[in-house]
Amino acid sequence: MELKGKVALVTGSAKRLGKAIALALGKYGCNIAVHYRLSESEALETVKQLRSMRVKSAHFCADLTNEEQVKAMFESVAQTFGGLDILVNNAAIFARTPFDQLDVNTWQKFIDTNLTSVFLCSRYASDFLSEGQGGVIINISDTAAFKPWAGFLPYCVSKAGVIALTLGLAKALAPKVRVNCVALGTILPPEDYGEDWEREMSAKTLMQRLGTTEEVVQAVIFCITCDYLTGAVIPLDGGRHLR
Ligand SMILES: NC(=O)c1ccc[n+]([C@@H]2O[C@H](COP(=O)([O-])OP(=O)(O)OC[C@H]3O[C@@H](n4cnc5c(N)ncnc54)[C@H](OP(=O)(O)O)[C@@H]3O)[C@@H](O)[C@H]2O)c1
Image (cartoon, rainbow, N blue to C red; front, side, top):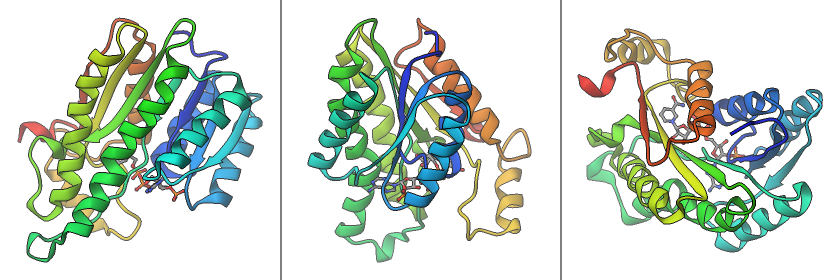
């Protein structure tokens, strides 16, 4: 797939990894729908940066756990940009959830936010992605899906669901829409995690360091542009899944 002139929506792209993916796609000449839920000023800043690259960009607010809001967002994106070629399902939540304190509301919040949202976005994007030459979906998961962490079970299970959903969607939407997944290790620690944690996480990888946003962008771009790739899950965690 040639990126120049394509329309991409990146969920949760007001900041952090989503923003890095949106800016990289903008650099390759894609027009970008910046999705956000609460981070409006950061979303506007991302749009401003994208427009300075001379691509079209606009921001769209939606709670991705709300079906009506998701449906309305994709209709509005297609109306604004004249279609949709690329969907990056990046938005998610992450938090420690000790098993002995876990209740069903917390469990459901992770499943709704991290997994059902990916289903809803893919469902409502698929009609637009199937038009013309077809499109591509990239889901962002976590290699903790393969070896779940006991203290983060709802998160890990939601991300395992994203991998299963990727494989199923690749079959359901072929040949018009390709669906791939990048499963990350630690790249950008949550803002309130310290340097000790970073050292500890680095030591768990074969590469002895955290990944970078540039490396995430590289993997995402590869998944989008390699036309024979569908149903692929790329572990991008410096080899941590082998330890
Ligand atoms: N960071 C890492 O090292 C790492 C490691 C492994 C996997 N990952 C995965 O990579 C992706 C990006 O990670 P990140 O750390 O950059 O993400 P993040 O900062 O934790 O979250 C990204 C965005 O998700 C949005 N979001 C959360 N709940 C939402 C909802 N109900 N509706 C709509 N949007 C919602 C938020 O948007 P607003 O701020 O606008 O509300 C938030 O800015 C995630 O899928 C994450 O699981 C990240």
